[in-house]
Length: 191
Image 1: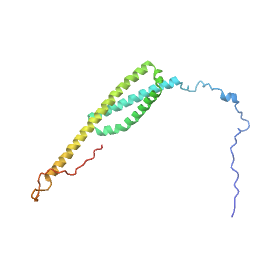
Image 2: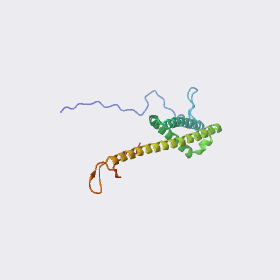
Image 3: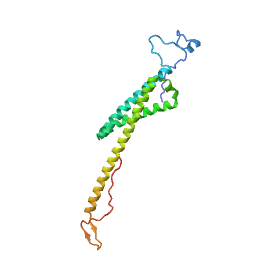
Image 4: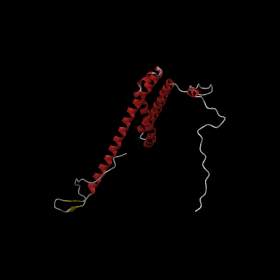
């Protein structure tokens, strides 16, 4: 059995190389001032204003999607409705997270400029109207599809009942007797 000798792996030194200077503890703890070309950090007020802008963008985008979906529902364009579904879900979740943040910290909204608050309030009112219309249109479409499918099922049942063979009271086979029977017909009620 031959054994080879491996050279030791170099270890990383925790001390800086010679010739470099370490910062004094007082200097490391001192706050740094941004250089003239460096981007400024967001202050809490600026971050709060940014939140209102983000929320306005989400409301605007969600309103656009709902407007398109409502129009597609009115025109019975199911493919368009399906294509808008995923985006609507994403925006609705984002809107809900913004609303949750507002409920956790209502003082943040009070810090917004009055013009922004009013614009957001108006946009939110319009969004709630679009949501109500969307819910109504979805319910109407589901109801109409359900009625259509039930009428198809009933038509199939009636046709099968009329064409089914049945026995008479005397026990004779009657080829196409119209006897009311419960036939097994089902349909998928999911969309």
